[in-house]
Length: 196
Image (cartoon, rainbow, N blue to C red):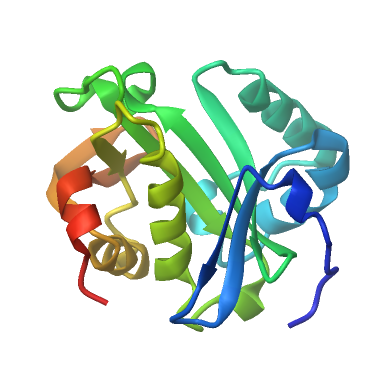
């Protein structure tokens, strides 16, 4: 794999080793100055644009990420494989997010959005272990019993990854910028183990 290798394990908010892929997975909070360049590049990648639609110039991306980072209802993370940054995550409280208007959101429900940045990480079997690691991280909050997500209905690959990670499809929802598929992962089902 190409890209900078960072030895920052002491800064991770969550860190695990995934035996199925033989790699470590870590998440650390976004630092705007440190991460702006990579986020701008990732958001402008051909495989990301159809779903994120944020091919903005650098100053606009800076303002967008800063605004999201200061939102008390979400936390932004850079995801790592073997200490190499390769994904972006927005972890949020679902009842305070727009998705909370589309189902019976509970106060401790969480959700997330994600993108895999460098194209060389696609199609290698990393997405499911990454999603499962984020879900495990979110379930560390003792009161959280459900995790939600709403991938674009056109994104068959993402939907399959979520299903493999323990999410059940609920229904399509018409969001302002897309038609999403509301999916929910229950703690009991996740801890019992999803299909590989």
